[in-house]
Length: 437
Image (tube, rainbow, N blue to C red; front, side):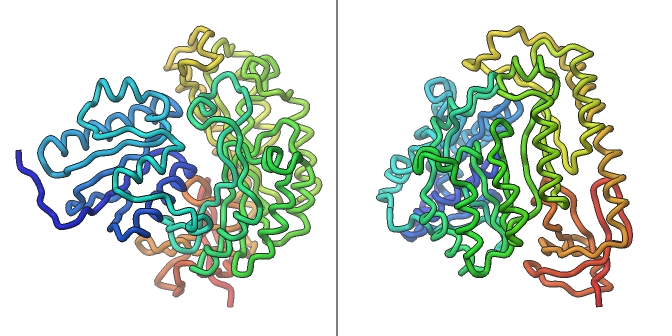
């Protein structure tokens, strides 16, 4: 077996899963770089001799990807192309003992809140003075701001509390400090993320304080867009809509995963809300913020979901006409409440229901995009791809939502700049535009 000899370590960090995991990786990178380590993120680095894999353990497909990635780099280590392999994140938090037994090539496994222990492997002490600062791995003009960790909800299908623990909010002043640091480095858009956004502040301030946080963040010079992700619908703090209506920096955009619409399924899911209450919440949002774009996710194939219950969900989606919608297939997760239910929906039926729901949403998205033809939108340019500059309006989040394409041969744009774009054509998930004179 060959081994590398290097004067100093170079670290490759690989992030799997959601944007919350990405923030954890960025915090790790920040701490390592502050101790003069060279760190690369995600893309393969043949010069790296230490690899850290930040795993996801949310559903079966995510767990499979994480395990395959660990096995891949365990083989790389066997070949002598890397010297150390560490695994952290949700999968490691949840299945540490099993992983240690099954994949012993990994030098050490760490949970979701064991950053100081992981840093100790590099002989690095956790630097508290770096709180509020963070190296970002996204394009330089946007960043994710994790406002809390963990979740106190008891949804029967969800394993997140098993991996992330109880809800813990970050203080407003600390989040403002981080936003100011982002702005100082050119960030123009911040996306607020959490396992449960609407719980923010209950532990620190004994009340829901998301509206106060938004007002404080709106005072940060340089930040022009603030976007809200992962808001739980039950007992939603409706003052958020009022902040959105009066604060131009808060995007008219809300990611609010509803998961289902049939009352019986919602009850089995322990979602603490009914379809009637969901309808009322969406109607309130659209009344207070007429231009709001709502993104949601639905979960199909939950144990016992009948054809009638699925048709109820499909009718709900048709009638509510969400601007953005994603669909997940139920994953039977051990140690969750729903694991006691029989996983009785065949994979073929889950896939069929996913396709049916997405076909409904595709028609809705096409109709809504057609209405945008002739409008002029403020667009943030994310990248140049082929013959187009690709950007987003305030109604769209990176990677998951619609994009605005502007022909590069006709217009010159700089990535990270805002531009006013006149929409001239539209497809199901893309808009085409020209710069206004």
